[in-house]
Image 1 (cartoon, rainbow, N blue to C red):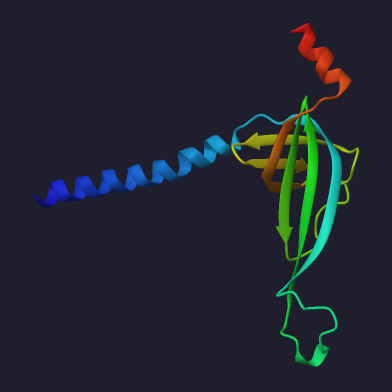
Image 2 (cartoon, rainbow, N blue to C red):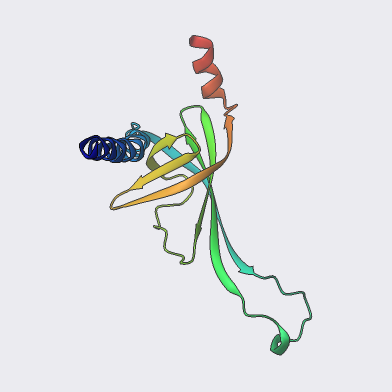
Length: 140
């Protein structure tokens, strides 16, 4: 009886470990493709917001963080991603018209800069209507 409990516990632990590591490895294994950064917008967000004209001595303490919204074209599709950080620490190469290796996994977009990967949440996805994409679609 005790031996069966130990075996059952080992099987349960192995199942749990497999359930956690297999999806993680699958999500990270997507092939990267060359994408082009279309635009990047950086916002400094303060919370809680303070109303205009408020007495600075009587306002609550605020925390600041940065929100980066980036649009990336990958083949004929455009992905809008969002990244939030307490630091303004993203690489300078996160700029419009730069090319970057991109991996897409479900609702996440990974921008693989040399020595640094930026993981962005995809907030919008659309098919590009540019002439080159339409010509490619017609040839197929």
